[in-house]
Each structure stands twice: as structure tokens, then as C-alpha cells.
Length: 255
Length: 108
Image (cartoon, rainbow over all chains, first blue to last red; front, top):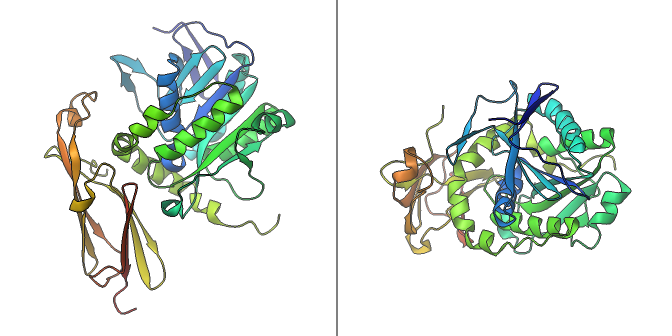
């Protein structure tokens, strides 16, 4: 049963119960991308922070998918909340043609729910990930506030390069909407689920939002997560190939 | 529609990727929870077969029906390469459950 539903563009947002974020409100976005870093990290965050599923989003632009979770029918894009944190989570890869409308609708929605800052949680695919022991995390801010928030987090600023995929569009829309946004991307595999990168990413995001996120269990269960995530990863790779993700490996000609 | 990456007979298909290194092909195979001593990667012409036992039986018991009742014990996969390779790999390396195998291209 829905408490409330609202259409923004071609997206329908529903809420299962009333909620509003406390100050300072953070909206964290976790969508399938390199190594499923955001999705794996967000799933862990939901568990350790005991976040409540407060709503979801759907659209005719998305694949015809329903999620059954603990016997309840849920929408492909799921929304969790606790105190000042909103988490927008999807394991289903959003088709490229849905991403433009989704970016705009999402930012509109989270601002109205009290989000002052948007955090984009993801992996940064590196071709030599197999050889890397110590993972670096990068950040991309859209405002001075976001830049300040990232300082002291252990991440370094990403200065030059291409970004391809759902977060590339979200960043552009965030600039247009003038919402303070920080993309946090940790070096990861592109084609394999990478819980180790998710753990590192969560530690940085925890520092940015001022919440300690224990990643011990995530690291302990990393192998089981990798086993479970194989089908999701395969499906996401098809989506990323469509978006020409390999552009990210190209150095830009003009800086 | 692609086949599921698991079989009700108890085996899982691993994720893998192939990279062309000029005169060699590099295959990365994700084998989490695999018993490293049991990993076998064999090439013949353009075909590579992969097998590995899991260190312990694995059940995704919170998954209703389908694979949720299956006890998984091993990985199995057959890969078709873009070109023929020399059967003996140039290098085999395992790190954190990911296997990297490099084959020389036949005739290269």
C-alpha cells in the first residue's frame, strides 16, 4: 500500500510511509556501474545503518521488472532512509534512454525531501586492477561546499578524464540544478564485482557525511558477494558496453 | 536470452574477460571461494575450459525457488577465444580469487 505517489517527468515516485530528512540532508545514489561498487556498498550500508525502505521509483522507460523482497512487492529503484541520509538504490541497470529523465527527476525529488547534498557512490574502472593492492579513491565536486566536504576524507581530486555511464549524466544534471554534489569513485574492476573497492569507497563516504560505517562484515563476506553478483554484473556489462564505457580509458586530447 | 550463470546440478559459471595483448591473449577469471589447488585452465585451439572446486558448499538459501535450493560445489566454464593459442600458458597468476592466464597466440 502506498502512502503517497508523485509523477516527475516519466518517473513515478512512491512512498510507503511519510518521511523527511533531518539536517544536513544527504542523498546517496548507488546505481550499477564499474564493479558494482556503489550497489554492493549501498547494500552493506542499508544493513549496518539499519535503514528503512521508505519508497521507490519506476518508469515505462525501465525494463519490466518487479522486485519481491521479504514477500513485499518493490519497485526497480528502491529508496531507503534513516535520519539525515537518503539512499537511492538500483540493482537493475537503467537503459541509457532512461538516464536523462531519471537524473532530472531524481534531483528534483531528493531536493524536495530535504537533501542538501548529493553523493554519487561508484567505482573507477582501472585496467590493471588485478595488480593493485592499495586502492585509491577519487572525488569530483560540483560546488565549493562539496570540495570542502571531501577534504580530509582520504580521497584525491579527479582532475582530467572522461566519465561514461549513469553517473556522468547525474553529474551534468547536478551542475544544472546547482545542487552540491560529490562523486566518490574508488579504483575497481570494470567487469567483476569488487566488494573490496566498495569497502574503501564506504570508508571515504562515511568521513564525508560524518557517519562511521563498519566495513568488517563486507570484507569478510566479499567472496560470497562476488558469487551472488555474477548475473547482475553480466547484465550491467551489456548496458555499459552500449554506453561505450571504454571511452573512460582514453586520455582526453585537450585539457 | 543468455543462459543463467549457474546449473541446478551444482556448478557456477565464473565471470571472465579476454584482452588482446598483441601476440598474446590475457584471460581474467573471477573465481571467488575457489580452492586454488583445484583450479584448472586448459586450452585447445580456440577453446579454453575452466574448472575449480569451491572451498565449501554454497547455498543462496534466501533466494526463493530457482537456484535457492541448489548446493553449489564448483565452477565450470568453456570459453571460445577470438584466435587459436598455444596450449601451454605463458603465465598463470592467482590473486584474491582472480586468475590471470596469458596464452601466446598460435603462429605469433
